[in-house]
Image (cartoon, rainbow over all chains, first blue to last red):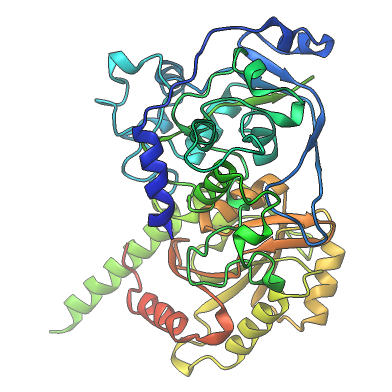
Length: 266
Length: 191
């Protein structure tokens, strides 16, 4: 199953989708409560998120608290600062439980990312390392609900293979329908989703694939027939992301997987 | 003439055992910086489990689907283990619903399921449970109040807290679990 999931991921990664960064939209940050957020963070007001999968009794919206979301994924340069201050997370020191052998595979040594990648999102980082970074920065990883609500999504009409869908699969274009904004509007926000997938705090909540054996989610056969249980089976991007997450283990360090942090809005 | 080698072997074994209980190995789950409370109210950290093999399952007490079946099968296994592995393994249940499963509820669960002293029932913070689950590869999600969608995964940890065996659907076949326990038993004292 993991192989099946990885294939589209790699394919999309190879397309090298890059979102337009740095075109700040003051509108997003103009909300009053947004003053709680720092620069390079976007305020996301409280709201609801409709999960991709139906729950036991049907479609159920999940309340989401207001957060400050980093505009960009954490870069190599930022991660370098973190490992300088926290030696246990350097590639030569990290324990195998917390990251597999490919951890920071593209770094030359403990403190040397490739110079040309400094401003790009750091990848080859495990869930543990990502979480530790965010904690040190006074935040945490976003939950699936928080990430999907703002960063994920796809147009209800997007179909596999369309430009919009490729964007959604990669999270390359921030659509954020839950906020009631249209895609063109959000294309102008400061949020950047370059061509990497991102860790979420509860990545291991998705019940798409049976990683070991076939009876995962066997409780009342809750998630048999994944496509059928999806709220919007045509949301190919969301399906890819949920599948990808469910294939992850916390120590994975993958070429296409980075992260960003959130802080709970004070 | 056999005395010296045997003595040396004994010494080596003691030395290695000491190492085993001093610091978790690189792959040990016991490296997690989390804190737990047993149903009897005693606070414990995972590293205190070192020294015994553990059969670990994540459950919640209001579960009506897979969990009772899993717990019952582990219990049946615990009662009918082959003689040569009896006493080599303990049993660990961790609730994924700490909000509902208070210590009192866990105590009731222990009583209702007739779990003996070889079993530990643990409650931790939602973050610590999420982390432990992530390490094990156990997926779960609350789908509505008192109901979770979850993996049906049972894990065997060796005496150092490393994962030596995992399987879904424990009820169907316990041979691999027996093998894992036997194998670990044969490795007594190795680092």
